[in-house]
Image (tube, rainbow, N blue to C red):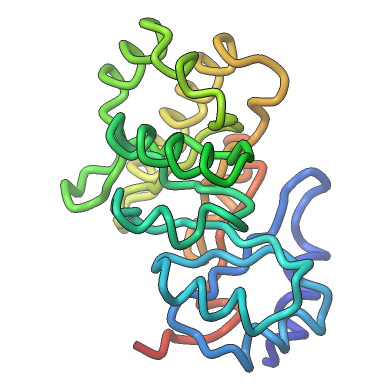
Amino acid sequence: MSIKSEIERLRNELPQGVKLLAVSKFHPVEALQQAYDAGQRAFGESRPQELKVKYETLPKDIEWHMIGHLQTNKVKYIARYVHLIESLDSVRLAEAIEKEAAKCDRAIDCLLEIHVAQEESKSGWDYDELLNFVRSRGFEAMPHIRLRGVMGMATFADDETVIRGDFQRLKECFTELKGYFGEEFDTLSMGMSDDYPIAIEYGSTEVRIGSTIFGQREY
């Protein structure tokens, strides 16, 4: 299957209101160009330096999403042009994003990455810690961050009930947090190549698809 045909298949399959994010990390510029030529405009990257190179090479109407763990000292590489940081996972990172966004005189859209999976290796806020920060109005002191929703990953498991439980938990977190942030808090990013149909059942508004579109990664 070609990149173009996979994108067209996914577009036809996804319900209205569910956005396709093409996870392009570790894939070459040529593959992204093929996806772009097929009409794809939103791409997900996990390394600021790789993102910077691709931004400089590819068309400027692409939406670049940062989906990987973001180190505070790397925010400066992407602050000027990143469309959405999906992996806001700590107070320290929020402070770094606020600082760099202020320098660029822009507000950066972000998703709150919440840890629900059973693997400790996956990043994200502890939800109780996040809720305490929200209730203490910590984000109100950060006018250059615009919170748009929640991102998370389900446990990598064969047991579908575990995956469903994780997506249900993310949906509950999203719904509770929306009460604090209002209508523009509208994005629930969950579901990847292996589990996105289940994520959609639980209200995902954006699925992050990589290997289904591009094949296995080239490290």
